[in-house]
Image (cartoon, rainbow, N blue to C red):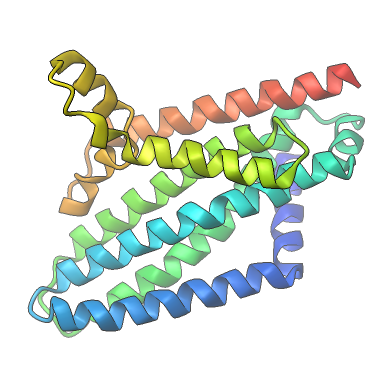
Amino acid sequence: MTLTIARQEIATLFKTPAAWIILAIVQLLLGLSYLLFTRIYSENVNDIVSWLFKISLYLLLFIVPILSVKTLTMERQNETLIFLLSKPISSWQIIFGKFIGVSVYLTLLLSLALMMALSTVLASSADYAAIIAYWIGTLICIISFTAICFFICSLTTIPILAIGGSLLILLFFMFIELFTNTGIAWLDQILLTFSLFAHLNNFMRGLLTSTDIIFYCTATGLFLFLSHISIKRIYEQG
């Protein structure tokens, strides 16, 4: 049933003009960024590709809340989520199915950026392993974005509130490391530990570290669990 919901979510996304418009805009902006970075970093292909994925991350930072609102908040508003919950389907299956659907779409978006990056290095001496590390790091970071936004969007039926709240929370977790100069070592370490961007640094250096992978997987699992609790509460309240 989870995979059925995921397939339905993917089909619904690609039936809407918004999904194709987002796809086109992201590729246009990435193409323009690529042209800019090839001029700036003409002698360092790895820097070009690294910046290409960073730009992808910043773009998707704003796109993921919109997709999450459509997937959860709008369905709560239209009461289609209540209809789903009335069927013999668990709230966990609904959340995970929708999460897989959105994640597949985001993976496609980022895979197009990967193909652009690989086309850049075909005739160069770039480190292919590092480029794959950039892609994996950016992807699992974006998937954790999705889990966070799902939780925020499960709390309200007001789209603008869901988008605004999701953006604020994502920006907080992304740039929390900017507040690490407190002079208190243990507090600075805690802030770094919860920074989504800080855990991306190793990937952007071409390193796949188990600590960072576990962090993103844990964050994703935690916020999906919280989303499940939130959706379950909605059903229990009728």
